[in-house]
Image (tube, rainbow, N blue to C red; front, side, top):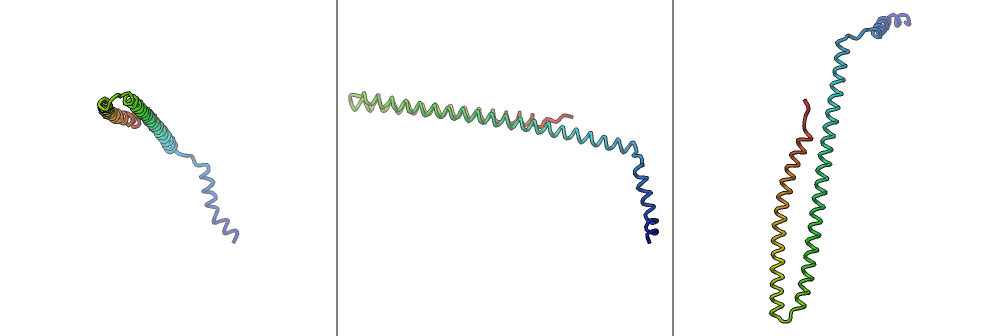
Length: 151
């Protein structure tokens, strides 16, 4: 049985020996090279795209943090100005020599605070409008940067 088994596998053995020495056709080698180069180019494009997207995200986050800082500083400034106005008002009221004068001072203070409120509301509306317009423009520009495709 051993001889029969050896004889049965002789054909396979010869075929495997021939496969090892078989020459790969030029067209097959070129196809593999071209496929590898195409894959390499695609990987480079994906990497470049991811770099652009990362830069866009960094830019957007930086702009957001900057704007948040500006808003925080403006709120702090408004609180400080309101506190100053309050204490100045108390000082003026304390110097009033009559009830009529105190009522007049109080009316002037309320009018001044109302004007300050209207002024801040207008400035806030203008600021938010500009922020929205700039944000939309920035998003559009960043989107264009992130998704530019080279031919």
